[in-house]
Length: 298
Image 1 (cartoon, rainbow, N blue to C red):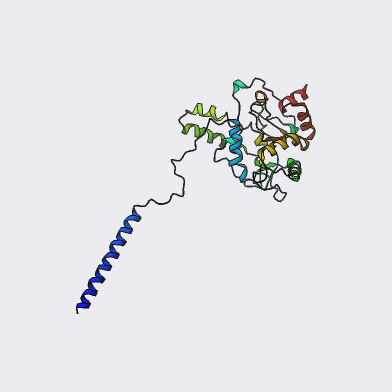
Image 2: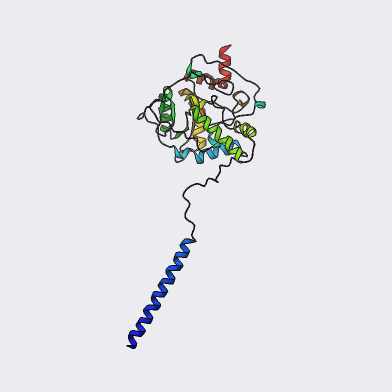
């Protein structure tokens, strides 16, 4: 009888201990904050307006190019009407956008009306894309699109570079007008979020993003070309392109020292297709596209 009594006491104590332990565990769980796997609506993008051109290029290399390191192929040809184009500009990326100089810096405004020669269409803040300008797009393995007419030249240029151990990749190409509008608005919104009024935010945004209708990315002939950082350095790719791209019909569109004419700061990654003959003349003369087309008219 005594043994049964002792056993009952021990059992009661054990059950009580387990109950207290369970209650404490429940309280701890109630006080534990759940893991956040979504972005809070209070999280905002902050625009760093203090970056230098070299810092912009470095951030472009580290944040952008590594995502799109696939080779170009001919497996997936699409036209604008066939493809479901998705905007890549929902997140603002200063490093991959054109940095536009201010109006006060632009003293040589060259206006060249489009004459139907698609390879030499001039697009900048003073030469707006014609409303009736159309073309078919080709979708690269990276997801970027280009004017289908420049595909063969681009493929050959990349093949030749890779045969020499140089590995370029396309990190930005065609953007639709709507994409350009969205990119501009994202910059404006970011500056407004920092406390700037709408007018100031718009002016500041236009220093980094081409006004919709004036960006070469909207015509499918412009490419941002950077290294596949697993195999090549920035210096290797930029250096090779600067010396060889003209042979394939591409020019360094925004060369150093031509900012007052092009309206865009020096961009060693931005190449534009103009055709082999035109590219060779621009390369040999040291002119930018605006100067070349102006001289051609004279």
